[in-house]
Amino acid sequence: MKLVEVLSKEHIREFVNFPKSLYRDNPEWVMPFDEDIYSTFDVSKNEAFSRDGKAKKWLVYKDKGEVVGRIAAFCNLTPKGDKEGGAGFFESI
Image 1: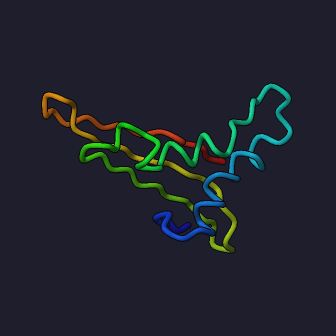
Image 2: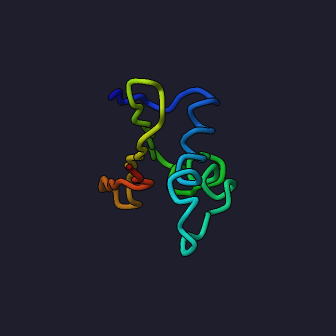
């Protein structure tokens, strides 16, 4: 397995699309809008990033190149200057 930081347009597309294949047979899964996911990581649309906020995304690939997981980590400063962080978008086979 290989952990890869999401930097290219292809990786971004794989990051957004991975849950669609993972949950395709689950009738109870509600697919989020792609634009909502893109907006989460867009500095101009997510006010958490308006001041020193950062996010990184990673994909996990099997040896043959199949995506088997994803995760994102976030950090930002609060108005008081405190650091906050979290993780999300965790999906895994």
